[in-house]
Length: 171
Image (cartoon, rainbow, N blue to C red):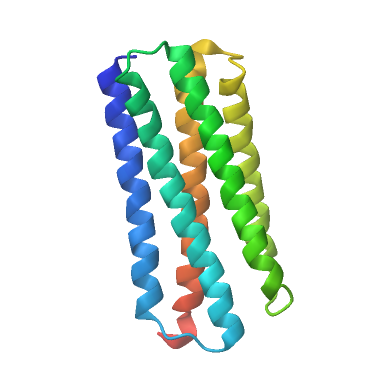
């Protein structure tokens, strides 16, 4: 695949992800929160949408920068996959750390946890395949799939956030 095609696709992914972060921030200021527990839950969801979206923006730009150094494809995708895995673990750690103090104040969204965990598993599986170069010819598509799984996580949490902010009974 040509470097320009890869760069264009990765920049498009970064733009899409940045849009999610912006929409999440916009929704958060449009709606008044009910209880303190509702506000805490909303803040956690907002953090996960924005942090995941920003990880995708950064992770989409990393290979673009590495490609400009004329590194081998193996290095570009291996380094990018390793960094994205670390960034993902950072988001997970941050979420767990943020959730601990408010645990029990609102019921967990088990459906969302299941969907996001499944997407995270697929994301990490794709990145491990790239990192260890199992299918060199698929490194770029697998990396792109990992970015898309991250966007899907942010999009799903965003949709749940919007749905809870503007429920049918309030409209």
